[in-house]
Length: 362
Length: 160
Picture 1 (cartoon, each protein chain N blue to C red):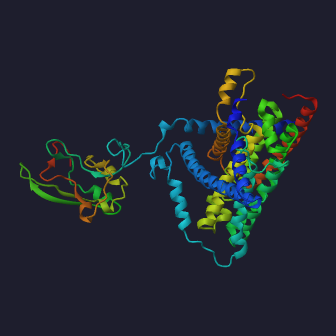
Picture 2: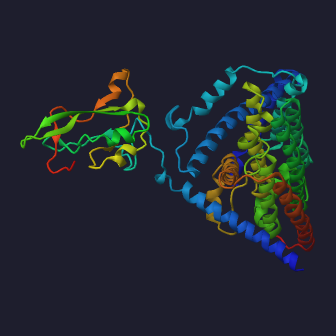
Picture 3: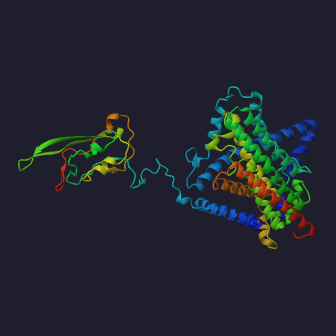
């Protein structure tokens, strides 16, 4: 296959070899961990800033505006300027908050994207953790974030924060179910939970096409539930600016607020990346049946580019939701989950299992 | 059974209405040339204000330096915050009659709320709303304007 030349394994292998020949194994491990940590940190910071900029521009375009235009050409330095401003702000701890929990909450929230991002394969050979239970790991770890949100809402000693935190808790706990079940549907089709294996299985065709009807239903549910999981509009009633000021992060300032903000955007990336991996074939190029020439051209585009193209497609879709639909009430959100998504999802799992059993898929 | 079909129909009609909304925003997104944002200081030369825009009260004069103001003072009465002062003077007409005409139509821009009431009150359409809006200035005295130009007189055929 032509795109094997974009494999990152030789690079990582040569770094590993170079280190292990020169320093002790322990030091090698430490250095490798440090490199990976710094790379992820850089990626999260830069990508978070970029996503904030992209969101503002996309939002503006949906509302027939221009968005940030002043700081730098087309406003590209705007988010960096905002971030510097956030860093220089005073860290205020309000009176009579639960100090320990108040300070702990942003770190719990920010730790979730750091953990989940580790199983995401960006390109062939560019994945730091390849569990047997990668999908399970992602669903398990991503639900830790709700603890941070609940803690922030509780510890802030503020009625808006408490309502926002409780809403967020009810919402995330419910939609976790839909995310998990739509992933289970695809795991039935794949027969494995290992992320790299799932991507490899889609070499012949993306699961969205391989699994046709049930996969399409699962994809729709995953995108809806993923939007709700990341607390984004139209499910952003946890921070509903117009009614709860800012919900659970009302009382936070400076870098702690930035943590909540960054975590929201990186979670958006994680959800999009998971949708890409499970439904759209990860870094696999788009192939169409027997069109050898077309497939060869597609193979020349590197896996990294494919991955980010698909991720940006999903991110755009979710931003499109946010700037089109009005915010739901809490009872409407829970109705949507428990009366619609959950029954459809259960039926969909049955449908997918039947299909896999009878071999009605490509 | 009927409720079950209703449930299914509800889902599809819900999806349909959501897609309708998304179609509208997509239309906005993919037609960026219809954006309404004005890049103000950059487009100063090409900026065209709307007809409805109220920048300041002006008194149009024709090429013979004539205006339509009779000095009746209705605009002064109509102004809710007293930003118009009419100073009139008496002159003798050719027939030997005393006639009251406008001496100075003083307009305090700093007090004006651009409510348009003076323009609507004017019986002879002598004043109207101008389009100029860049009024910022270091000196407050520039906000007091005399609308009738020096040496101007009333147009022929304007009824009292």
